[in-house]
Length: 293
Image (cartoon, one colour):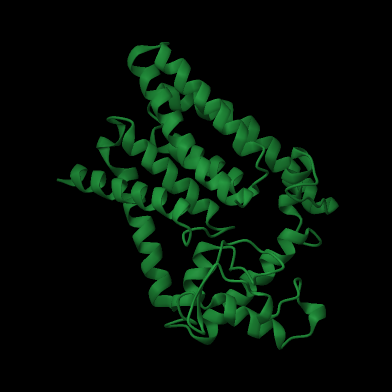
């Protein structure tokens, strides 16, 4: 399993454990349940840190700030924000320094500080250079077919064709059609790929949920996806009933964390990520609809 997808999946579990920890602590103070859920929260957070998934880290930071803003009138939110701000400041310093000094990192060859600092390096970090190239190609695909895009699931094929037509010195990863190995092949032109990894056997994807949606479905599908994802978040965030019970907060944190992570990676074509995301979004929309009645 890709380390980014693993971190994305763990984020949903972290939201459940952290939400139940805070809820039980506010209701009953220190108890066996708080200790148990708190232990699960710390162990899950530690695991996410050591996945070296920079997108997941950024998603957690932004979701924490968003949740702190939504629940800003509660004491626990103020404490959490007070504890989170120094961590965010240190990360910001590392990112700026990494961009200036061109620190590179990979998921398997650098320490935590180097990985954080490499977030700001868009010059020679292999992962960042490859991701930016894919983003540019996705934007060009949308520009060429602004209404309908290249078609659902066709980004990888369109990317292979575009890169084959260009000089290899401008392509960060050498791609050939015969190197795309499907997990399941249905007919001549339809395949279900094994995962969203960038690997020698696959052209991969856009590494962005949003650019992938716009490149494959055009403005119509891209805007539909944005509306479907953001409207429940906005409605839940402004609801006055969002302070009652932990589950709306858990769903809100989960969805926001993944939507931010989705700027840098895309895993909604994988059931192990799609299932918790759409379940969380559905719960968010259902609770938000109830609060408006």
